Length: 460
Image (cartoon, rainbow, N blue to C red; front, side):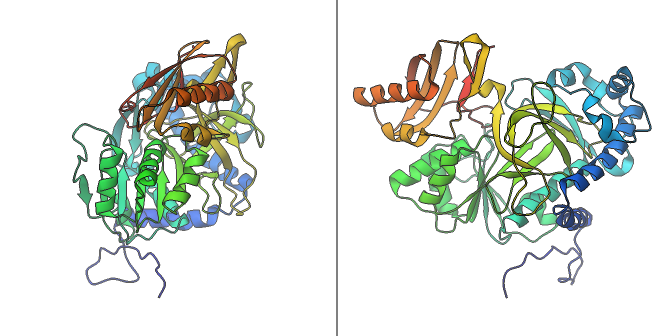
């Protein structure tokens, strides 16, 4: 009998058909509906999104001072019918608005059946911290989308999941890390194997030693961390015999990392796009490398500088509206990222396509005359750069319009000839005569969340 994921039953003596716990039942109910809605047309999905948004706006009008004031200021009030006709007139929510609004963004009367309310604090990659509230209902949608990702990519729940992403001091410490019986909340719906976790600040050598010992079926980590693990594996001829797939999140996934993962470990990468305050925005298509928007949970807009919706192939700012978080609604929230709109997917799913996520404005190269452009480090000859010398990690920091700091972690001392070749590559890649200051480091510092951005512009 071929493997099929069987729901987890909490009823004594009842194995199949299973009866999961309340949260598991909710997840399976959502999965059942999402199995149908993923094949709807984008227009049909949008129609249902606006029905849900009408409910959310009415709630926000009644219980959230910030939105009451914002909507009144543009002459919009209940009933919120024909919402699609004036949706783009609604103001865009910035992180600075969230900071200034404080408790005025928090609902004074969340429906009791939306469950417990929890707080999170996040700065993302912006350095601008915000507080967000979310309901248990919103977290149930998060769990359902996690399960959709597992099912889309045909992961075997019986396997072992390894996670290398936590960065807190003393969290998941080397050499043992942390051990769990299940794959987090997925256990509520399906029987799963164990999961293990190690701190992302461990060295590549320590991580590979741990991974060899654990020999997991799946690995979840950040793209930059995966890149250094693959490089270490390549140099030391290390293979992970059970590895079936790698999941990445939280950073921009470069194309060459996908290629190297297939070459070195022989497995594909599945990427996802999410934020702690908004949940899942998109998941990688099970048949292609681009991503599908999670339309059942969020409305995602990609807009140009004039506020118009971007067309296929155009790059613009990402706005996210959460559909079910009534504790602290995020309506047309500018998350700070840029993305390229993709064409309808050949897989047949009507869920909108994001061809690629390009990062934040601080990840754009600034040139004289006010010109900004994407460095596109995920394209072109980045692999040539990595082969000039034994480069393990890199980071480019634009200090001003003429100076750029180049941080490199290398396996050995770089020769004069290699450094000359590195400088020539930099001049070609950035197409501007920057003064490149090269610093050789033992380790490039990561953010508190364990992230590493490969390009940062400090030009305001």
